[in-house]
Structure formats: structure tokens, C-alpha cells
Length: 156
Image (cartoon, rainbow, N blue to C red):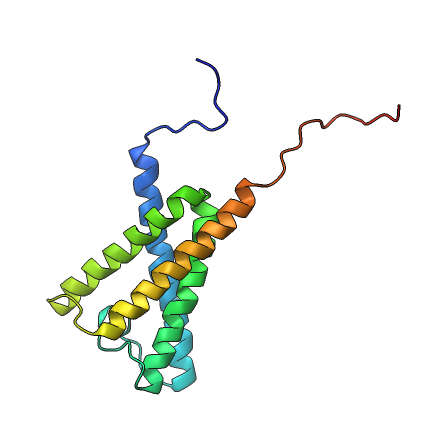
């Protein structure tokens, strides 16, 4: 067999470790963004901010600040996709996986699926934002010019 530019080998350990890494990035940075929001409005930190669907909303100032934290978290997770996944084709897969596990976590925390439309809208927007920006960054890196000749140039 000839060599391929990029070989696609099924590596479940790599995939699982990348999933765990992206979940860690998602919750770590979401916690940091929410801590920043809590510092702005002088409120107590709680797991409700991450997992309760009732916190995210457009009606209250606190809900809008939490919404801002989720959107900023999408941007930092897109950077995580760029640094650690590095494949434009896999950005959507990892984004959906991260948000699926977040939905399962919310389901367990609340004992039922999130019922607020605002929760679904925010997570759909964050999923789209994270996937599109992550894919854009990865594609820019993948499409860089590959230097073919690195030897000295001569003027003939």
C-alpha cells in the first residue's frame, strides 16, 4: 500500500480521551465564566447555574448574564476544538457530544428533561457557534500552505 497524506485509523482510546478532554474544557471554562458573572452581580455560586434550566432566561438580568457566560464558553470551547481536536470534520461531532452529555447531566440534575424553551434555544445557539467557529479555525490550520522545498534558492 502507498502512503496516504493522512491515515484514518480507528483509535477508540484517542477518541474517548478527546471526549473527556472536551467535557473538562466545557465545564472548567463555563465555571470560570459563571464565576466572572457572579463577581459582576455579587451572587452566590451554585450548580444550578450550570445544570438548572430555569436559570437561563431572557427575562432577568441574571439570566441574560448567564446566557452571556454560555455564549463566551462556546467561544473558548471552539478554541479547545482547534487546539486539541485539530480536524474540521470532527468539530461538529465533538460539539454535539459535549452538548449531549451536558443535556444528560441537566436531565439527571433536574430529574427530567429541560422544559424551558430558552434553555433549548441557548444550547442550540451555543452548539452552532462552537461548531462553526471551531471548524473555521481548524480549516484555516488544515489549509495552510505546505512548504515543498526548504533548501536554498538559487537565482538562475
